[in-house]
Length: 264
Ligand code: ATR
Image 1 (cartoon, rainbow, N blue to C red):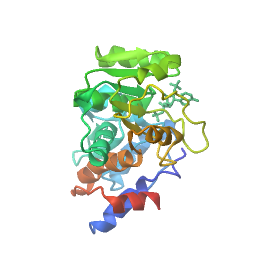
Image 2: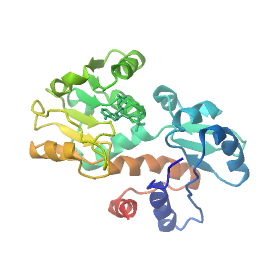
Image 3: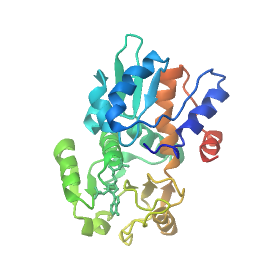
């Protein structure tokens, strides 16, 4: 599967060099029908764990022996640890990465400050929703082109979730303290996200999960409106840290040099 453009080898490779660890982090393209077999073989080849990405995040969960509560809630795993007893431990660190990025780049931001508005209801959005609810948002508004996916999130994540029609996405921003683009819109080569931002308050924190480009048209417009904006690269860096620590025994620091390494 297409992982040639993944930045994770750059990030982990940088940390391995920085901490002088004799390890390797390698991209391995795997066809869905081979995932189970590959996950059985990797520990025997000496691998201590893997990150899994699209399209394997859901399947990885079902193949694991032990699943963290948050990975189960999100319905997807991104980090697998191969334990010495042969068991596969699955976690999802995307929500952690999302929150850690905001804490780093917007230290005054408080999830409790007001409603959060999430645009998108795919796998990444589910991790964001779980982490925001966990962080104490009073209300979580969500909209998605395919409405049933937002309704599914409400039915699984509960009463604080309020579903908006896709055509009402602009209205959802009124009074929101935290605004997130969790769709792939705005990515290089894709259409920009077209949600009217007139209702956005200048006090809102606005972030995007897309990090190519770093400043998406959505973030640029929010910035023009005076909002504090945080790009999505930090989420990628921070979601990598717990895995690195579990595999290599060293908590890596996510700093400017890590960012530069990921952008190389
Ligand atoms: P990921 O794991 O990265 O979240 P995903 O599950 O495929 O990937 O979700 C992609 C998100 O981008 C979804 O919210 C998707 O909307 P749909 O559920 O309606 O597909 C959204 N998305 C992708 N292309 C879109 C487009 N052209 N217009 C609106 N939303 C789009």
